Length: 245
Image (tube, rainbow, N blue to C red; front, top):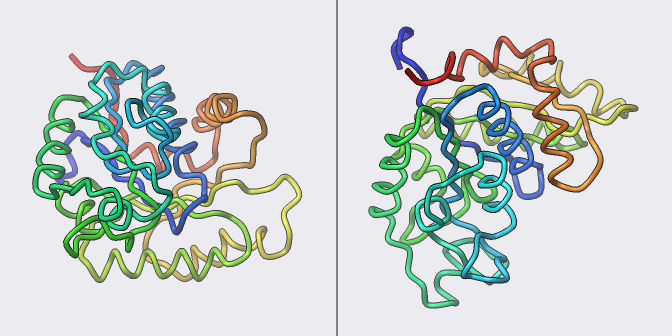
């Protein structure tokens, strides 16, 4: 992306499941929306959806945070009841994923908004269908990758593996964040930001503090915290500068 180009969006991945990437993505969407940005959101594949006539928990939070008026099929196109990787759920439920169509529709959504946040499923190596992985989807859509890592013990290994995989696969990486940093961190948690920053060429864009409450409350809290973070200028480089027009 040329230095003068306005950013179009981010593809959000995690170092694994349950690292808080949905809460963070939704909080970023909320912040952008309240800043007057036309923000689109997408959860291309979601498993463990109880009612397939609706968005799953993750997709619903994203749509709520962005106040999305896009159709359910454009924001949450593939929904599965099985709590499994998309490829496994798709095969078990006999609901094939059309990968080419998924990429095309994702790009179309990006074109319809000033800025779009697309949240993957789990980590980069999660299978989608026919040998395609989340990493393929991120690369083919073409948005810079933002990696969400949990601040807990083990994050250095998981984060480095994810960043090295992205680099090997030639996926553009905006940077990474450390999520859910406790108020009273352990030695491992407290040292994780410095240790990771010394071992990577990618930028540590934010350390997000741990917050409490239900998901909606957590999203609101993080949305308010984001612009107060010391590292906010680093993350802001990858965000649009203001409202459309």
